[in-house]
Image 1 (cartoon, one colour):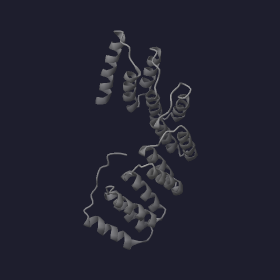
Image 2 (image 1 turned 120 degrees about the vertical axis):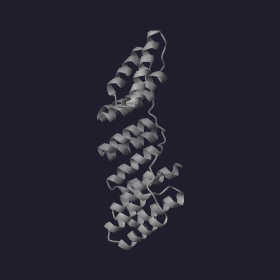
Image 3 (image 1 turned 45 degrees about the horizontal axis):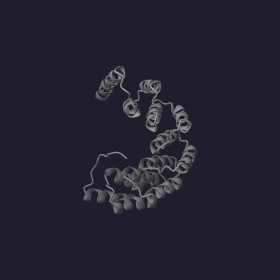
Image 4 (image 1 turned 90 degrees about the vertical axis):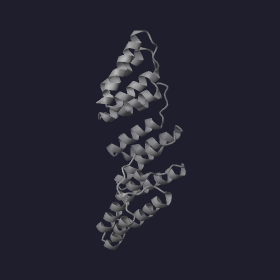
Length: 240
C-alpha cells in the first residue's frame, strides 16, 4: 500500500512537469512504469506507454521489460511473447531480463521445448544468461524429472563462472531424492559444503526424507545426527 501511494505521488509530480512544459525522457517514464509493473497494475503501465509515445518518447528495452513483466503477472503471457518479438522491429534488442521474463513464463506453462528455443535465440543474440536464468531453467527441467538436461544447464552455469546458490542446490538435491538417486543427491550435498554454500535444515531434511522414502533408515539416521551435532538451524534466504 505504501509503495502504491509513492507511485501516486510520483505521477502527480510527473503530470505537473508535463503541464509546465518539461521534456520527460525514457528514464523518467520507465521509473514510474517499473513501479506500476511491480504492483501488477497493467492498466497504468499501458496508459503510461500511451502517454510516453504521444510525447514522442521511444520505448526502451526497460519499457518493454516492465510491460512484459506486468502482462505475465496478469496471466497474459502470450501478449508478453508478442511484445518480446516486437522489440527488434522497434529497434530494441532484448537483454537478459527480457529473456528471463519469457523463460519464467514458459516454465510456468511447462513449455520446455520453447525454453530451449529461447536459449538458442539468446545465444545467437549474444546475451549471456545470468544466475536467475539458470535458476529458472534448472528448476523447470528438475520439476519434470529431466535431470539430464537440468545438469547440462548446471554445468554450463559453472563454465560461465557463475556460482550456484543454496536455492539451485536444493532444487537439484530435491529432484535427485525424489527420483531415488541418492548418490547423486549426496554428491551435490557435499559439493555445497566444498563450495562454502550455506546449509540449513531444508538441505538436511531433504536428504533425510530421501533416504527414508527409499528404505535407507541408517543413512537417514546419520544425517539426523549430523544435523543435531552441527546445530543446523533454519536460515531465511535472501532470494536468488
